[in-house]
Length: 63
Image (tube, rainbow, N blue to C red; front, side, top):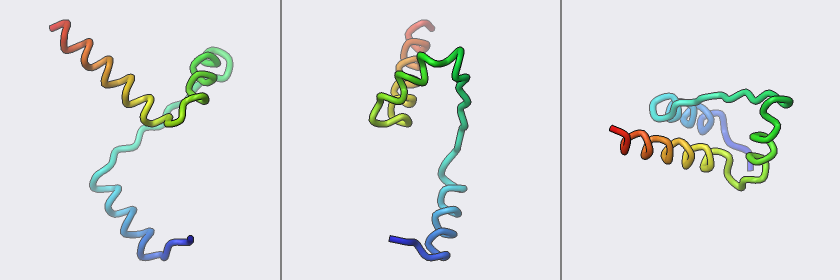
């Protein structure tokens, strides 16, 4: 189902206010293990967020 121009613009406006985007670049040679593993995950975004939250939890326990 196609979205209208107004819907697209509304989504862009909402995203600009509420979201932050980060781009990751993986080297196919040196990061091939990461690429292979990440490709097997159902949700790339969910997997990365879970890993970051786990690292944050470990950092908070160190202090």
